[in-house]
Image 1 (cartoon, one colour):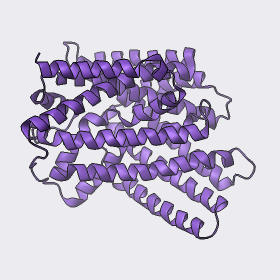
Image 2 (cartoon, helix red, strand yellow; image 1 turned 90 degrees about the vertical axis):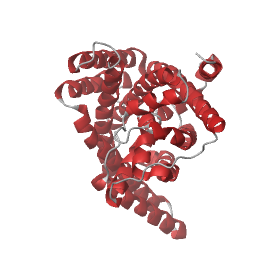
Image 3 (cartoon, rainbow, N blue to C red; image 1 turned 180 degrees about the horizontal axis):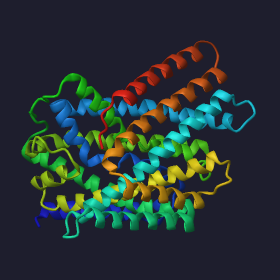
Image 4 (spheres, rainbow, N blue to C red; image 1 turned 30 degrees about the vertical axis):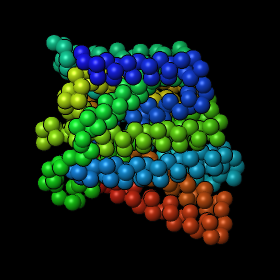
Length: 405
């Protein structure tokens, strides 16, 4: 191991220690930020750069910026609904149209969460066992089931706080490794005097590239989990911490894509999976592949837990608190386990991807209904036009997007 490798490890350890310190870990604002942040920076982090390079070539950073801007627009809608729609949905003045749209929205998101949790944990098991002699569908299914059962048990016995503790630890480790990766890439760029790469132009037609960019919106999916933590955090805190999670993840994604471009020249043209970045990161530093393997495992675990937490909050909301989060978690996990053994997750994930886009579209519809009820005059018209445009964009994503994962 070189001095540079040692420095990278030291940076990761210092950041992990800081983020796991009691004052940070037990801070309620950080705890409310962890769930959306964990879900946003999920498994898509490792695959986004190769995919953007394949679709946009040297304009990958600009393409990432477009995705981030669209995600922020959707995030604004979710925050608007947190501050306004939630109050209307539980009062007599809430219209039937609002309640109906909210019900459709929640049902679609519940389905997407159940599928995504199964996908995340199965991918974690596949990735972990791929480095051992025990790789195989059956053993991967057994390991994934064991992990899911553990998540269900923790959620049942400890509730939201128990899952958040596991989530906080995994997110803290993952973020520390990611920041160490950014440090290593920055040093690599400075040392080699390269800040861009003349990547091969995509052979895909324009329509296919646009469809793939639409599908990549789902890489930054996850901020909506703040919408369903109302039983633990007030609306103002959830809206603010969700914004923090989006800003933090946007900075990380944009920096990562910008700094990794020069390294992508080592990437085989046909490779665009989770192992791609891990294999070529060895060209930057010997220790990086090992750190990224660990980060990938933490990424899958934290994203899976984040979506479990979000689904649990949905069940509580839809049942009017008649079903508690502690009871909801094991039931949801049971459905995810069934998916692992009954279906090929890589086939059904396309359905989940479009379901997430459909959910966002329904949230925009809810925002339009609330706008027409609460606002008047020019502001009402302006907001309605803006939300309607966003709804059309998301409808196109639902119909035409090619999923990233």
